[in-house]
Image 1 (cartoon, rainbow, N blue to C red):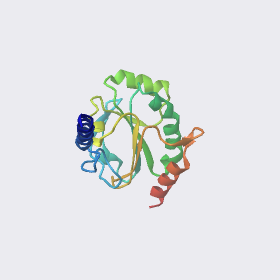
Image 2 (tube, helix red, strand yellow):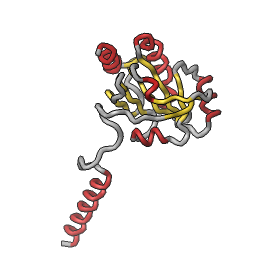
Image 3 (tube, rainbow, N blue to C red):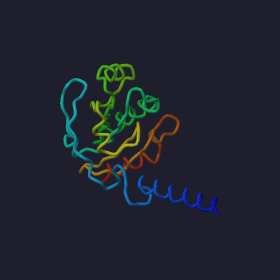
Image 4 (cartoon, rainbow, N blue to C red):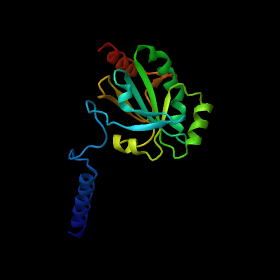
Length: 176
């Protein structure tokens, strides 16, 4: 009987933890497809200020990363390729660096030959507002500022190139 009460107590405790964590469908964290991407105002590494609305009319691949994150480092070449392949077709890659030290971001941009625009989010406020769970996390945002895709972790890729699924989603947004 004591064992049964203990097992029941543990099950109730586990259920309570899941409900508090939002796993029962009661809450959701982060942005979902169709949500309006929250506005932000951040500085570039050169001091210029940018807002999310500055990119309206373009398709935006918004990548939140940090210099100390190994998967972030590994996908820079992929983001550079997307910028090169799609920028003339109305797609912009925008990196938000969550590092506290702007000098580390400057060194990273130089070392990794980053070809896309990078904004500084030193206190992680945008990442928090977007509900990210870690770095990297990427949002595909349409011309009207709505989230049309979300990638937790590294972007899907095949042999160092963007995966067909990612390319197809970008192409579909270009064709809209």
